Length: 136
Image (tube, rainbow, N blue to C red):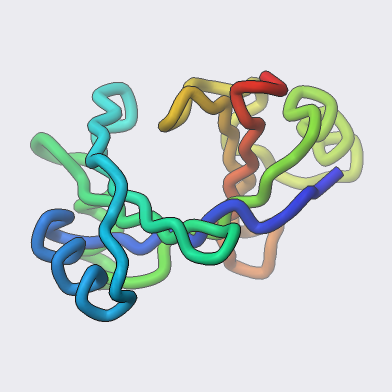
């Protein structure tokens, strides 16, 4: 079912400023910044030894990421797990009693399909599941 940790996401107030900070910290350049209007976020990824670090900035008024930062501050937002077959994984997790935020996959960054599990079913951790475009 799970292939690997695909990325760890960090909620940030300013993706550009945070990208400069992490470029210095990691000694690598970030990938291209991408805006996901349906999710009301801007994202930047760092490739790090087969996994990624994602910086996520909310865009527009009253966006979910802004609410998250206002309540909890900048920091860890979610862990993303790559899966082979996202619809089947969602079906199996739902049958096992996991609360789903998304019962069907939706478009994600970089041409992926994604869905989220509710933190209340995962010891308080928001889990994103992703299926890569070559498998989607």
